[in-house]
Amino acid sequence: MNVYTVHANVLNIIRRFFFGMKKGVMVLFLVLASLSTACANNSIEFVSPTPANGINISEGGDVTINMTLVESNLTNFTFNWDGTNHEFYGDNIVVMMNLDNVSELGEDDTLVKDISGNGYDGAVTGAVYVSTGKHGGAYSFDGVSDAINLGDIEMGSWTDITVSAWAKTSDSTNTQRIVVKDQVGTPGNFMLWFTNGDWEFRARDGTWKIASISSTAYNDGEWHHFAGVVDNANNAVKLYIDGLQVGSNTFNSATLDDSDNEELVIGTDSHVGSYEHVFNGEIDEVRVYDKALNADEITQLANSNLRRFDTDDWGFIVDENDLEDGTYLYNASAINLNETRFSTGTRTLIVDPVPELTPEFTVWAIGDPHIQTDLPSYRSYEEAINDSLYGGTEGGPAFNWTLSLNMGDWTGGPCPANPDGQDVIEQFEGSGVDQNLIYGITGNHDGSTNDNWFKNWIDPLGTNTATSGINNSLRPSPVRGEWNRYYFEVGNVLFLMLSDWNEPSLAPFGRTCSGGHPAGRVTNDTFNWWVDMIESHPDHIIISTFHQALINTTAYTNLFEGVEQGIHGNHTWADSHGSSMLYAIDNWSIDGLDENHNFVGERPYGFKKYIT
Image 1 (cartoon, helix red, strand yellow):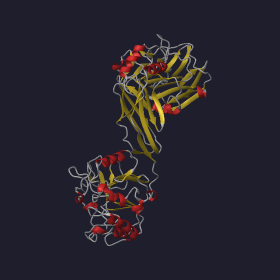
Image 2 (cartoon, helix red, strand yellow; image 1 turned 90 degrees about the vertical axis):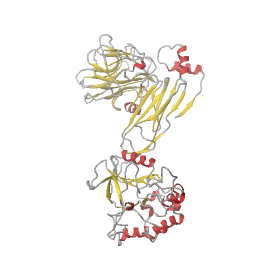
Image 3 (cartoon, rainbow, N blue to C red; image 1 turned 120 degrees about the horizontal axis):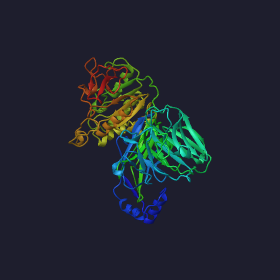
């Protein structure tokens, strides 16, 4: 948590507080008393199901961002999404009602608190609290005589207004009011309502100006978000439903007409004691702003909610939906009465473009090629490549592969040196194959410090091009990630490449020659990244590649280095049906896989085994 404190004298705090008030008088000692508590513990943090920082999802996907906030004297809450600030609590909010019947805030069956800080509490008549609101609780209205009355809020000097609420009803016959400042027979200020088959937002500039949509599709017994806006700068009155503008009209006055001083009422008209046009359904999360929210702000309002659970406990949740490809940054910040600012810090979300239709391609997975320190006991990498291209005594007929996965050790020597790395490059040159077509992972045969041999010579990310010859921009499918966990895509096939990083529980890293003992498995961080990638790419076929064992998931396959034996009892180095094991995640059905194959490991993250 980053905390920034802006020092201000008491006079400036009092001046800011009173200038922010919409109406009424606050006794000075109350302001001064609040200063002593404004420095109490405060915090804001992301909580589940907020995505982990830097997570990847597919284009068109959705994310839910959730956070908790502790502050008893909140004056501002702002959520920043993709570089744009969205203020959900501040000077422009006049009425804010969660309708959650929170006793710690002084609410009960007869009183609803205005948590904007402006004191426009609502008196409940007949309406019944229900716990099944859009966000937390809500109030149910019987269509006959129920109301929540906030009293007269003077709006005659307002140039703009935004009124919003969540509502649900199955009644498509009767006239129903969600939030109004208008009495039947006496023209008022505004109305957000349903009448004669139309959903409308009306505002007066001397006469009613109406933005509407003729539809009963929203009278379906489901929750919908309704918002009305007077936008004086553009001479317009607008109606939004579920975050989208559905109606507009001209508005010609410099200010709203509030000459009749009607009460602001939720769920019916403003005729106290003889309510009419009562809503028949449930209403939740009422907001009134003295500004015109723009289209993006209305969408964010419909997709999010700020709630107060206690005197100092708040919660904020937002859904960001149908995301286009790109990198998104987001954070939230809050300010209290003492002008202390505190924030979540910034997180990153990466949205990958939707893959095109997967082209036809062939993968050659090689599990145990070797270089000079292991020869002649093992087949060289150059021989394996040539056998795959031209056929060989152990490899069977030649086949044309598009890209190759090297899943083996590269070298059986536990502590390879630079000459071994140079030999890798020379073997590529001897075969004539572009090493950018090879996607490699490291096994547990790298005893160099922090696996530097693999980074320098195999270099899947192309960060050491001068040494390795790998140039990520020249790969048929560029990779993203880190050296020990990276991915690439071919159409809608996602390859997750996981390297061992010797992580013994009771010994140092590295091979025996460098004082360590290899565990031969991926790290906890790599495993968690793998799980996140799988869960965030439900529309992909996922192929996971690793060398020996994936923690918490797989056991050893009982096949030497994952390579099956050839017809002569030796390893099948280049056979397209026997070169190495690959695994596909089993949380959907994949065409072409034998459903009778055994699973290795426990579901839901067990791998289905098949030979490439």
